[in-house]
Image 1 (cartoon, rainbow, N blue to C red):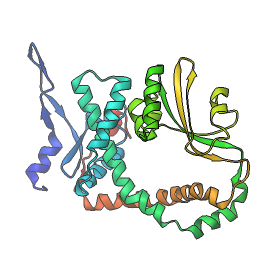
Image 2 (image 1 turned 180 degrees about the vertical axis):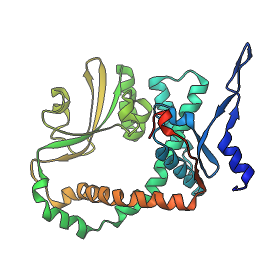
Image 3 (image 1 turned 90 degrees about the vertical axis):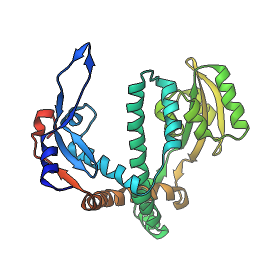
Image 4 (image 1 turned 135 degrees about the horizontal axis):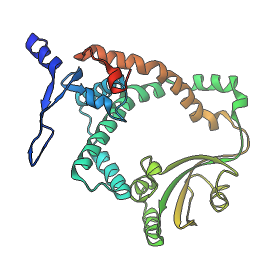
Length: 290
């Protein structure tokens, strides 16, 4: 992999034909800026509006490579998310669809690697004693206003809303139905998760439907400006000082976030050390990246 001819070839170019319309077009030459194991990063990839920095691209390929080592398979989740996205946004061009799908696949692979090798180990390492110590030192942070945490399924017609409600009554999981039916793509990809709301932060019709309800209560369909909302109460907090037990998950999240911020760069450094990684000397300012 490190022979002179191979390195020289990588420094010169990756040659490919960009297309021919009516007559042959000139051959374009792509300058390689980095190689990560068997994958390359070209100058044009860095010039893309959403490509990110060279460091971002190297990180992406390191994580994808690690996913292959761990035999991680995301095809089932990929199909669900792709179908949901296509249904809401539409991707009629086969080439664009393939590119989008590959990008989504790589994103899911990277997320799974981080979940298995960074996030889960960190979360499981936080003890009850650690969480209680934090709670006692920050009690004033856990004085609550009444709030609810919600998931939603948003559809545009009453018939589809009735179908979703029927499937919920049959025992189908809310999260899966949100991915399949919800027309709010942002929340649909997260299983319908909307977030946590205090009184006064929702429309009155939605607030009246969910506040004071128990966990897992499903409200709806609620007609809101021509579309229908189906909501589930994932969690609720009463007003006043929250107990340690009520705050335990939130505290674990705070402590985990701090620990992940420390572990993540160490983890990436380890992947770099084990990888075949070569960065070539190019002027990245010319492609808008420093």
